[in-house]
Length: 449
Image (cartoon, rainbow, N blue to C red; front, side, top):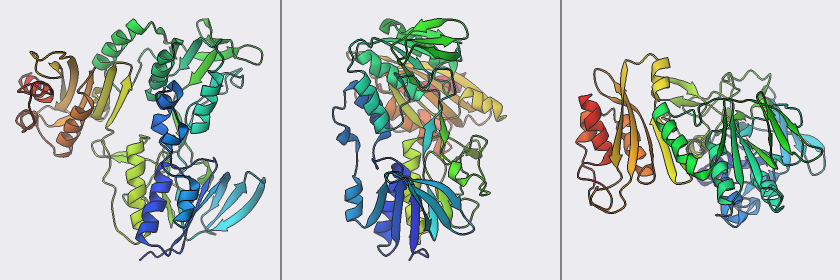
């Protein structure tokens, strides 16, 4: 049984609604109130670029459950309600009912902060002009789609070359736009090592992407509508700009409350998802996660983490005793006809963390070479020098990448050596793999290096 009678959850997307749903299933007597500043809850934010491109036609397909559906399960969802301040000593929050512009105080026995993260939008000159968009919510995507109805919008500038930026680059190319990618660093997709990035850059050439790397945005030109973007080196014409330079955790409501946070504001929680404040919990993109290899808390905002954290938190609020084990940062992204995936440590992370390590880069086939349409997969391995234990892997290829990175994640979890990986009993049939699967080819080559 739960020791809490009144649970307040701030944020109604992945972690917040997962926690609410699990808690209500665990203990029906707990009163749960969810405050969400937007009108939509419980949706797949990772699908937004595909909604913008039209691959996903209906926004409703992204929504798992409506507020009404949660209310039917006795979860009191209050949309257009923004929590502005937390008072842990009084166990109250200040809530602004945005539809009425009225503030009120709400008491809680337990508080869950699942406020997510927001796009970073530096105060550049002209950033408030029409035609400049972030992408984090369904309303953001709606705004971009509405603007794209204007056929005069042909030149699109993508500012930032991380996951969202590259997915939006794909969306704009799919829509037939001319795309300029602007990135402050020369390195696109910085979580990946140089070998992977070089293949990605080469693969982008056939799509005629205008690469503006090593330049920093300073201002946007135009009257009301953006018509140019100025960097520290040049000025480029553009009809639309999409900002994707990163996100910051939404932890401001705990400002001054004494909660422990990382430098970027991510809320630090223990394995039970509890902060250092009594009866205050956090989960999702606003919180930090424990990295199993780095042995420290880091900020890796991924939907996989948020949903798992929410489930564990909901069970614990209901009287359970579950622990979140930590992460390896396993992720995958589709960029046009290429798939990039990674897990564990990059070479840079291993170096910064003083591991005694070696690396290997190997190219293997997606399936048996004699079977039609086999394509190369580039595989980077990071492993301990003496034990040959796998520490990290990255891959790039046109097919067969996504599920293979999961093999590498499991290998890291199991503390497997390169020899262990090479001798795993993996499936084989010519349309799907070689007698030695690509991950085993990479392990064999690395073990001899």
